[in-house]
Image (cartoon, rainbow over all chains, first blue to last red; front, side, top):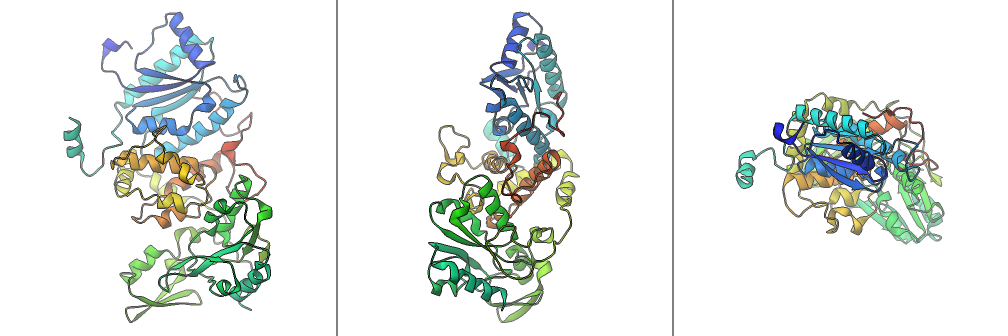
Length: 153
Length: 318
């Protein structure tokens, strides 16, 4: 979905340096069409991703968060993504209790050579977020929405 | 000999080898017990044992590392001690654990609702399964089952799970399995309702950090990332987002470690049901890793370890 096709949403992507960032690069070099909603943050390893990064992004107004790392058993640091897998799965199951749609957060595995797979992951995720629409503002209190709107506007 | 006398004599027998023993003593009124730090035999005589011992004395242990400390524990407190041992935040050889069976502790909120207010309490006595409170000249007989904390109704560990000295008779568990019915009931609501619920609850937060300070497993204390400026995790604003974010930090840092002692919720001066967040995490961790925090001193918390082949996680990802 090109940017000109409609309004963009804010999607944050945490990509590991060794696989998924390379995969996204491969997709770029291969000139695959990609949606432009994703803002990529490059991290040394998916094991570096504190679940709080995701929570902070969602609380701070991101409409969706995508985490991508090396396939399990292919980690550059041999075990980073195993820790990540546990933490991120727990987080994904935790989100519904907060009233945040768990579909706004996904984690996946893309290797550096999988440009094609990266294209399909990012397209699918962007479509999923567009189907959900913009996220509700988590910083605005439930009681005084008008007031917060006034100060924001 | 009653449990309290046995406890006192056991503590007195060990006192000479210890720097101090932590238990519960009389507070500012008969209803509120307060943590008691016993250093001499005279202090030990002030020791209390019973449903008023609501605090978790394990909270003090990480801060006393290097000292030889005795600690009196209820079942839930002993789980916190085990979790601290698992994470090597305290040393077993520095601890002497005095355990006794606990039939439940009172929830001050429930007592307040039964009494109207807590300002005029003159006397409290425990008679069988009842707590008899004399307040403002009137006597109230409150069944312990009704004023006990919610955690006690689903407690499976009334007896200390780890102890050097155990006094009294072992009690049977209240329930066979914790079915997390409260979490499921909350989740029967729509996402919007849940979101509005937490915004409403978190709006009341005054960021006193009592929940954090009462938590036995919140061990960073002055280095808590909630107060760090670099990285600046949460701002100084009073909007609901900053308050909520703090609770997310607390909950996520306790994932797989929380023993559900409920101190966060008890310490909260504005009554935010914080334990619900931690119970949700514990429910998922039980399902994913079949793990319960603070039961086995030799186990490793699930988020500090991994399996190459996870049984309950979808390998292909999303």
